[in-house]
Length: 242
Image (cartoon, rainbow, N blue to C red):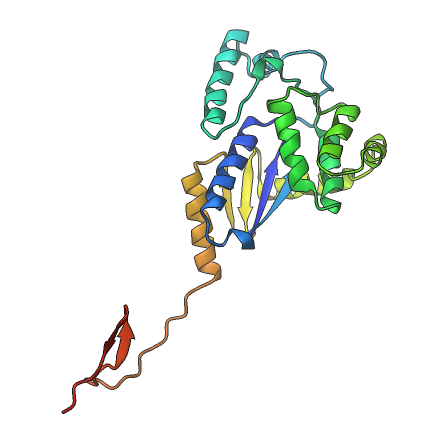
């Protein structure tokens, strides 16, 4: 089973949704046969680099609300994060452009470290209050994820490196009609939009697994009225002799 996940590193519900999916997978008996593939999505492709503006100010401007209203909205999101074991430090977040972070994730994928780096990028932004648009910060996260720091810096300095990989992901998202993230696609057949409860993911996983791996039911050919000689639940049924 393959799960494709479109998300952005500054999307709070992407991190929450990731945790809920992971929770569902923990209880899924066939989890070792599930591949999770992270896809790029920029909430704001035109976002400027971090300028010192707080996330509260950014949200207030984007949605036409007061700073206090933005703070209250973030409190609610923080409570949802806490319910899955995450700590969001909204007051210290450094919002900015995420294109380079996505390019770095694509590089990490070629080294088999995409999942590790994705977790570190989300944690760096939401919990550690790091500027994930800064090349030095990104290189440090790459190194912590098991990648070569200097190679990561070289990738980041080349604006074309892995840029097409990011654009391809975003193009597929447009074809699917994705306008918000997180967005989960299971086996290219079923989609789950948003940070749904773990139970929703669990139900979807079971449904897809059963459809992809149907139980074969054999037609009984025993003559009508024939005695049954079989064993079930540790007991054997022996037909009576006439």
